[in-house]
Length: 340
Ligand code: BMA
Image (cartoon, rainbow, N blue to C red; front, side, top):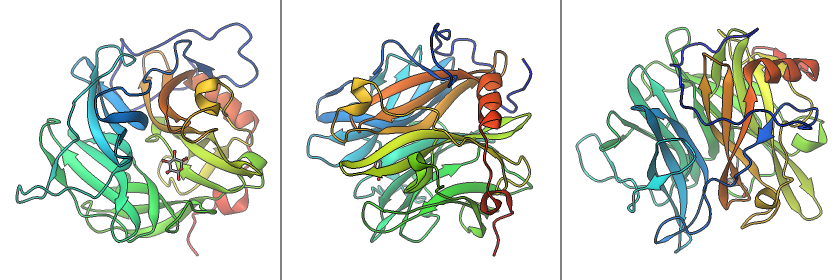
């Protein structure tokens, strides 16, 4: 291996398939049995998509965006031995406040999950008199305690870094509006305590590349590597028939992640398969998590497909870093520290 994944434990049982012959120029290949989560996965839930998973106690655990049969999304817990076959709790996750009283959002969607210093954090989108970000922590995946919402509305696509940087927590987000926002760049904010957030910086903007020319948003929690933070994000384009969501890749500076070191000018994955092109919302590939193994450099990307399914694609650190660098275009607004 040329490059190293840092700060993550080995995952010897991570889901994996070798790169098939004829995979094409972009070194990402789909799991042949996709989608791994299909429609009507549990009673009362029509679709699970845009969800986050991680290794846990020798197997895998995840927080899943579950669109209930009443149309309202909530977060459900799932467990798996192999990261591909999932068992779900039949009840949504119940959040409590710090006094132990139930404290449920009106709805919750697009969760992300990270572990920082032994505590697991969930971040999602919810209502706070407008589209906003919700956050909770758990030690055991039994009790989930809400934290203060980090930002005012309107904001979505929050992604917490898996460790403090320079002594502070770092959170990516995408300020937006109340609707299906026709704009949006990725910003980063700092907090000493996960309550008060500031020192907001611009990380990267939508770009002139057509596949991400409408808006972008954070995806999976960044992976710490010897080359910087590897970020899989989503980029959106507009067509006469609606939006198309693809997966993009960038490498952020290790100590100052508001600076983009490399940014792939092509998408890494775009809707092509039936489960990506056809569904409740067609043409959506929406990454929310990775499982990655420092011993082998293998990376499994978990993404929502067509707002209907969860799918998995594979790559390796060496191949994806080389591809991103070889196709990188970093504009001044992305490479600068992002403060104006
Ligand atoms: C975005 C979010 C995602 C969704 C996407 C496509 O605005 O709501 O949850 O996957 O739209 O519908």
